[in-house]
Image 1: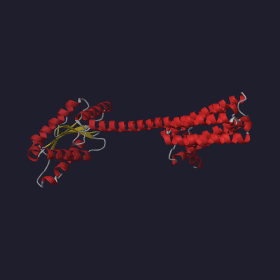
Image 2: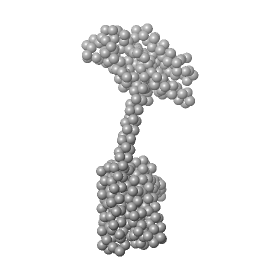
Image 3: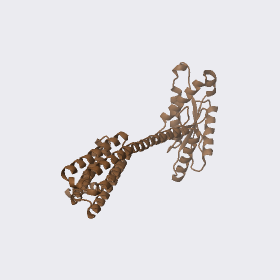
Image 4: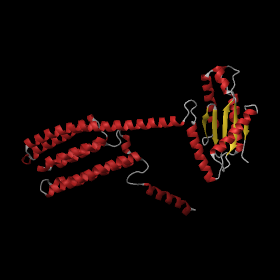
Length: 382
């Protein structure tokens, strides 16, 4: 028994191991964030390669390369752990955009201290870092990052002037600082504008999708009753017809008509008629299963489709609907006001088209009306 108990545990452990992946597959948002993080990591690798080239050409000290080999892997491993464990979700910005940018700026600051005459070229790295913020940052955040960048560069200049004054030309550094300031301010404004455009576009797209969903709902539902309109009802019925034709099962339909509806409109007005239509449709929807569907076939007629239901089950459902509507009350119209319905039910035979089946249900409805109304009749094919 112990070996049998251990086997499921071993299988569970294997499943857990198989579940792990570098990029999570169960959370698309986290997957996107980690892909962006890997893009930033690739930029680190590119900068490391350029720094090594500068070292080979005698434009950068070896301390920069040694520091990069420690700092860059450490920063990226820590950030990946934060992303992969989901700790980033506790932050206001789960992408950790500002944190990643500040980390990159500090690494660049370290490299520029040992860059010697290549320092001016490395200033371009700051622009690359700011481009990363276009995904998330607004103009104010860009300005904060730009200020942080200038502060780190200023610290670099101060440290170089104090410890390595022989390797620095202050006039050149001041000019580069001024140019960098102007570029960062301009980039902050432009980058913030682009980010705003992306955000507005995202909002507009969400609103458009919402509007399209509303339009779609309006296009398939009857405005008054909320049930499906005739066009969409027939599409669903045709789909059910094809599905059943392939599988060999059956379904049933019922044609429902409100008795003496014209007299309701003539006597009590069209507003009362609308109220009656809504009440009847509410009863129909509450009486059908989730797999069933119904629609307004025209005027005061409704077509009910009961999936996976034979004629006997359909008759029971139709009778329940008829009885519920008969017992329904309209307090605003007085205690004597009643509404009744007649229903004609038939079952799909599997060897006919939709119009033939509906015509048979309509014939059963006619029979119910001729027999005194407020009743259910069936007309099944031989």
